[in-house]
Image (cartoon, rainbow, N blue to C red; front, side, top):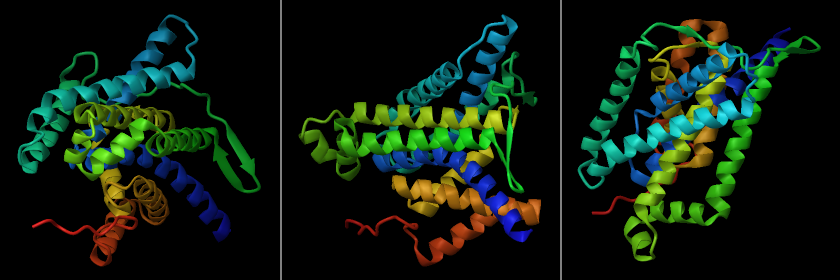
Length: 300
């Protein structure tokens, strides 16, 4: 019975880690390119959930069958637009200012989005039930129960992570992103448009956060304007755990986060909220650069 319980929790942890991974990748990409910890990233996740909510309800009110792929594309696009707007309006003017200024601005952007959505009369601060975009089905294998929501979460995350890996490693845009991450001045001398690469980075990161918001809405059908705070913090923690700026590290850290949280929550719900942060502290004490991060020497 214990083994079945552990396997069930492992499946649930992988499902949760898949959602964290999509948010965490945005954190680590932006940090890798701009050296900015974008604390508003969790709110892009919230925007994606609300975009899907309104699209689906609009279609249901008119008795229109809307493809799930369209909902994902439109919601990811909405999150990407918000992310690019935040970069253009708030972050770009501070690009060459002290990093603390950009960090404080990121906190301001996060709070603005949360309170702005709460103030909108057609949204408000209250919880809303996310519409049933996909009919839930439970598959039983022995004594293990697997929801089709878990399959969708893992599959969508896997497809997007494979796409990102291919983009970064096999395309000219990815090569430019890696060059900008390594040395912006050298990349500029080689003819790379730095601002265009940064914009693309925010676009991809925002779209991934939007996808995570839809998956969270489908899996845990309750949304509200502050829903991105805790997942955003956990995803950032996962990125640091794996090695901030390292894409495989963000994926690894997210799955460690999801699995450890699920196992700890099964034992004690309060313990589940803090166990991943305890793991982070332990890892950083012995490996400050994160699990897959590289040691870098400071220039003096």
